[in-house]
Length: 321
Image 1: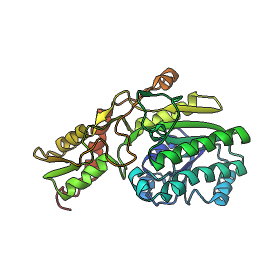
Image 2: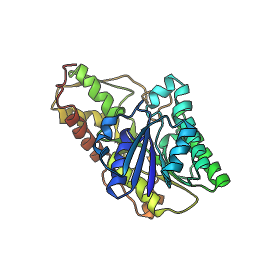
Image 3: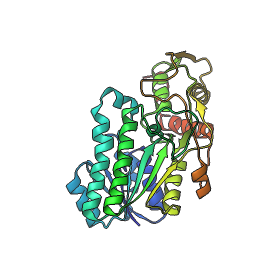
């Protein structure tokens, strides 16, 4: 298969590129390097089946040219604003980086005749709902601008599939953790402990509870649904079966750092910020029936990610920044 990954130099995109190359596919990585970094894909540079193009996915003309020239069969569309909190402070970010990149990618595909799109959606499309979240839960009322842009993207993908004979795999992720990450709760906690290893600020009351998916399990789920689901539009929740509280994440982090006397300071309230969904649980029946399950629980994903991120920062002692 010849595949193109938008956001391919980013956290998830670079792991996906590794997996596609490992299984023998050709990969064109498109990234404007505003969030991604070339160090994430540098090890692939000498591989003849890999090519990097520094490009904004909103450049429809150039995207269409690449898709046609490289004879791309499938686009894995991961380019987006990955920092939900940042989007709530600057509303245009999710319009430009999350929704517009989806429209531009779809339009470039239409012009080039590329028919398959695998889309990185999110649990945030559901909004704040009671009970387990199944793929057919509704109405969908996002509480974050990121979630709204992801939901609008899903709608455009559905319409493009119907109007232009495309096929889509829409995967709704929870929080994703692992090496190469640049944001998220572990990343934020590490940054705070580099500044002060005596006290750790935790947004909200620490009781927020959500599933956390290890990045390699996510990539495995993406490729499994792509290989095994064959409807015109395939929508799947991808996650482990359990969740983990934010307070427990903090406890694991200080355990792994060997900092037993860190005081936790909570900012209060039941959520970290306006638009945050403090707790949710997926219904995973659909993807389990397809044959896929996450290899790591949420706690296992967090602990492994913490170990990997500490290792990445090993050259810089904590408390020195």
